[in-house]
Image 1 (cartoon, rainbow, N blue to C red):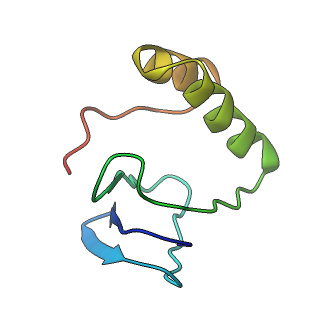
Image 2 (cartoon, rainbow, N blue to C red; image 1 turned 135 degrees about the vertical axis):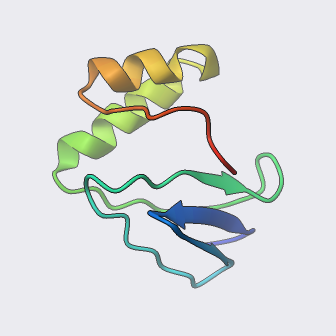
Length: 84
């Protein structure tokens, strides 16, 4: 986290953090997240393999309405509505 506040649910465990917080989001473990306020969080994601980050970036650039479709086209499994 660079700024703001972000909440993640990683598997069954929830955590909220602000600047300086780090979170590990393992593959094949559901990890929804949300910001405390719209457009008020600065987050850096480091994805491996890099194609995971590119898929997510491209899906978000497509617009919110197409996010689920674009993620699924890139091989991501969208499990349902964000529980947060």
